[in-house]
Length: 138
Image (tube, rainbow, N blue to C red; front, side, top):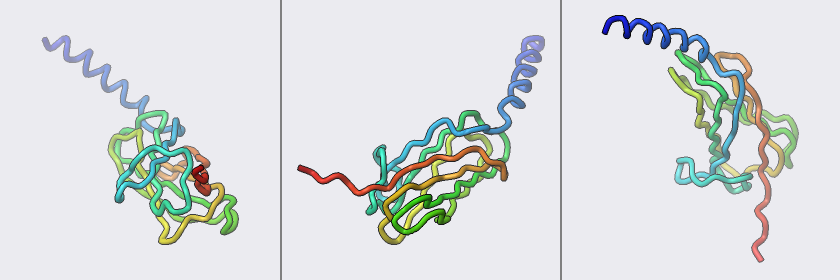
């Protein structure tokens, strides 16, 4: 039995360095707010969505104590361009999904927004999303 444990342990140790950090964003899912929690998946946010939720999936698993930061920017909106809105930070030991959110006390200006993700101060990637007027029901 001891012989079997050593190769298995060696194989597990060799896997850890290859999954040491995230190198990019695989996908971002936008979610409507459901009483402070992520709700249904949406394609765009609408101005009256006070809290915006983002499920950010990284393309690799991060192992070890890591600090993630998501910066939010208004890129080109009715309120102006290149305006930093705020950030969301989280610390994790093992992660490949970041559940971030941001809110405004008023309606969101319509336009193009961007989120930038960093891991321990290093850029992981960016993602553009929209806030748009809802389509009128017929």
